[in-house]
Amino acid sequence: MFAATQQGLLAVARVYAISDIHVDYQENRLWVDNLSRVEYKKDTLILVGDVTDDLNLLEETFRKLGRRFYRVHFVPGNHDLWVRSYRGIDSLEKLRLIGEIAGACGVCMESCNYGTLSLVPLYGWYDYSFGTPGETMLERWMDYYACRWPAGFDEDEITGHFLRLNTDRLGIRNKHVITFSHFVPRIDLLPAFIPEKRREVYPMLGSVLLEQQIRAVKPALHIFGHSHINLEVAVDGIRYLNSALGYPHETLISARKLRRVF
Image (cartoon, rainbow, N blue to C red; front, side):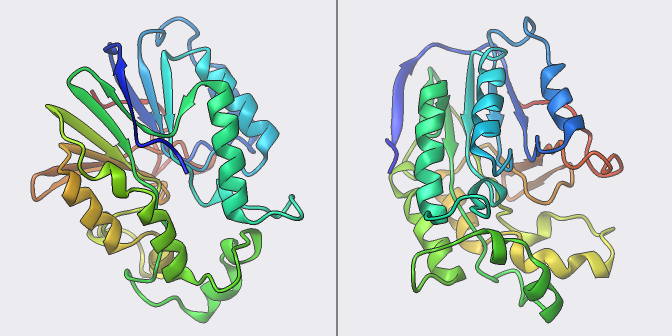
């Protein structure tokens, strides 16, 4: 669907990351608007999914960020693939449209090399390998109503489809490699303080198969989103980082600022 890599790009001064900016909220749109138009001109931004399900607002946000950063790298999240406002297309067609918008705005959805640094986006979904969802979540989880998939697609096939998009990227090697996905690659990354009631969303957070792909690439750093919980932890030689803007009220779990990662 997308080219595997782009070669020969200039080196960047710094790399920043943010996930889950949810610009459907006015406060978050203002956060984007208030980013400096000068400070990041030589820097790259990794945008780790869940921008908006509105394609017009997505394009507007891409263009705003593109005016502030040297380059923006993006991997979509589940909210981006919602089609509740788009009749006649499914979520895979929505992904294709997102790719067209990204290309028109200069936003990169492929693996890219900046000299000795490689940035590698990894697609994903959830397949219940983190647990079995309860009846309440099966009734309330918005993806079940807002996404639409080809006939015969269940969670395993959705996850498998997205992971297959990563196949050509798994052999990338460089002095410095950063991978990034919207979805959570391993459930033990989430902190112990999360109340039991909140853990009902765990089955919808990610897949152990995504972690296997990350281990195939062997990055020094993997950036993810989706949980909205800002954290940084090292596991078996890989540093995992979640830097989410999150919803406006989530000030206790989201730092609501850019994170410099390189």
